[in-house]
Each structure stands twice: as structure tokens, then as C-alpha cells.
Image (cartoon, rainbow, N blue to C red; front, side, top):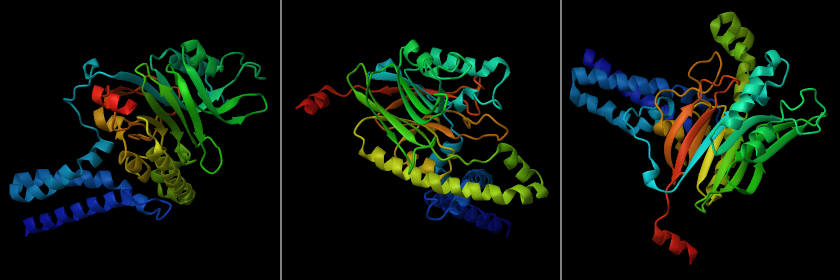
Length: 381
């Protein structure tokens, strides 16, 4: 009787797990409640692993079923909790061109009064750290720059394009979404030590801070790669409101409905935005690297669409959760780097020692293996 009940529970967990995976693949614009089912996927994965352990101790023959399910769904497990304790990173022996890539949501370098600290120390340190970082390519979201001649009182403090770009030996491509009355620029940016041979901006309906940009870069090997930098729809949800909503029944009543509306709007918008981008990605003939503030968790439609086409750097080489949100909400990874199949991923790091934004920067090294000689000759005919 006891074993029969345990077996029924195991079947229910497996059914739950498969349903949650199905929910991940449903666009929120078609049926947004499915996103809540998708968010239960980590729990279903964990319970299935618990079932494996339970049946190994009780009856190894029954354990085969949840073990097979765990094997088949392991890529989904790796999305939220990467496990690669014995992995060795590729080295120069693979040949080809290494590319060091850094991505960061810089939160407009804390220029607003409510974000500033004493003497704008965090702003100064963040810009300096980015300028001195050895990365070949920088992709920055929520970028801010005060060009020469802007009518502000900070002098050269926020002349970030010059400091991170030309003075650091990098070309700059800034996708501006707003230039205010003082001449200050808001948007996103790509900085590259490799020549930028083509560039473009992709808007979602209208050009806002939530948009995408790309740059085609010519490597010393002669290969051309495309780097995308994008920032999907924000939730517009205050962290304090979220904490208050689950800390008490009163907080849930007071904050819950408004948070739900904003949550729904964000889900629907991001599903439309990611579908727009995936169609662009499918038409690109170059090896691609993607940097993104997804504003979505690894168990979401947005992440799933990218994972179907690309390697996620953290899920491929990392260990642990790889949280990137610098705030009171734990274990939140919303900043990601992806690479097309041509690349080998060397390493990936979340820079927890750089706390100057509400997002921690991420960096990775990618190797683009040299094409075989026969392939190169065939391509030139």
C-alpha cells in the first residue's frame, strides 16, 4: 500500500514536470497564465530527483523511470543550477580566435540623485572599471553618456563613451533612445577592440530603453561575427513592493493586484519581443554572440526560445545558480550571454565584486575554431 502510494506520487511528479516544460514553450501573448506553470519547473525537477533517490533505496527497477526522466530533462535542470565540476576550458590548442566579452546593465551609472552616493564614487569607479577591463567587446544596457558640450555640472565624470571607447582603444556604437535638454544621452552601447564593419538598431514597436542593437565585427582572423545587445521589457515592479506582497496577508492584498497587472504586461511584451529577435537571428549568416538583460528567469518562454537556438554560457560552463541581480531577491539570474553553435565557450564569470548597479556584470571567453582549409577554399570559389 505504501509503495503504491509512493509510485502514484512519482507518476504525478513526472506529469507535473512534463506539463511545466510544456508551459515554458507557450508564448505569454497567447496564454499568459502558462508562465506560472513554467515557474514551478525547478520544484518539479527537484522532486523528480528526490524520487530517483527514494526508489534507489526502495526498488531500483522503479527508479529507472524517474531516472530516465531526469536524464532527458537534464538540460532544463542546468538552466537554473549549472553543474560542471570537472569541466576543462578550451585553450589556444583548439585554434581560431578567442573573444573576451563583457555585458552589464549599468543603471545609467547612478546619475540620478536617488541613486548617487557620496561624490558619485560608484559612478566613477564603475566607468573606470569598464574602461580598464581587458574584454575585447563590451555590451552595456541602460547606458548613459554626457558628450563634450553637454550642459551639466559634472564636468567630464560621465563622459563615458570617450573613457570606455576611444581612450580604452575601443570603437563605440551607441544606440540612443533619448537625448535630454542638457545634451545627455540614454540608451545602449557596444564597444569593440575589433573593427565595427556594420551596425543596426532593432526597435519593438517604438524605440525605448527596451530594444536591441547589433554590430558586425571583423576579427584578426578575417572572420566576421555579429554581436547582439538587447534589453527586454522591464517589469516596472519595485523590489520593496514584491517583498511586501509575500511578507504578510495585508501586503498581498495591498500590493498583489497591481503587481499582477505589471507582471502580465511584462510577460506579454517580452514574448513578442523575443519572437521578433529570433526571426532576426535565424536570418543571420555570421557566428553570433548575444548579451541580454532578459528581465526573465531561466524558466521562461524568452529564455527557452534562446536556449533552443544558442548555448547559454553559464549553463554550459558554470557551477551553481549564477545569480546576477544585486538586490534583496535571491537566486535571480536575468542577465545572460548566449553563443551560436560555432563557438566554444571557455569560461564565464559573474563579477560579484562590482556592486555599483542593481545588476552584476558578467564576462566570458569564447573561441571561434579555425575553419578547415578545405572549407575555406570551398567558400572562396
